[in-house]
Image 1 (cartoon, rainbow, N blue to C red):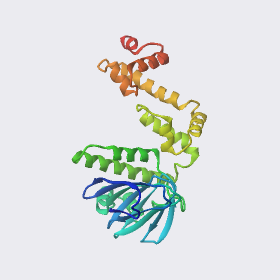
Image 2 (cartoon, rainbow, N blue to C red):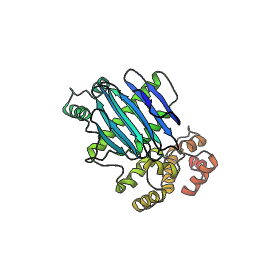
Image 3 (cartoon, rainbow, N blue to C red):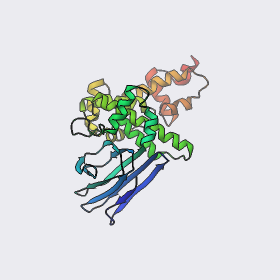
Image 4 (tube, rainbow, N blue to C red):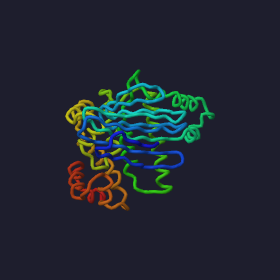
Length: 296
């Protein structure tokens, strides 16, 4: 996919994040104080294109259908192009233009899904080629999930090159496709606020060992921090910080019985930068220090 810009008087950030024979990933970000931003891109022949819209009010016009769409922030589409196809993206009212596109060759997806192997695989590929992964409900594009945000962050932040990068990128794309298929099968958008606490809990279960901040979670989910805290507590009768602490302590207690693992290593593994903070939290939870519990 080639990137061209229809505006030359502003700062633009765009770059090729990865390219192989089968996959191409490009990130694009424009910001200006002027009213109008515009970008043109080309979808390759016989390619599947994942387009993640990362800023507000992005308009898209595709030459193959001559139809205009407008996207909200953190929506995405999975589009199949049988021939080389030009599309135009633009914003108005001084909005930024930020998106990430992953282009994958048809043959790569064909070999991955193996539609000849069973009916389910054949139906998935057919849905992809018929562009049934553009609208989740009628004319509503699907919202990115927490996991999708994390995968894009991992892709953009990966620093290794060569075969390790290729394997890493391919694994992440497979995971993205799985998440998309699951989302459409369940017919459930992350934008449904009734599912917000469940989504947060899943995110915490997978990331409690990291240095989590409520601002990061709020940004990824796309929900106001106060509403996020309130809905989680109403659902699980505990705060987000208390829940994270509980997960960390339960893991720490399991690891303590292994005398081969140093206390400092356990602290880091459980998300604590400083051993003193870990020891204090452990003693408050279990009434005994990690060292004493290990000694019995």
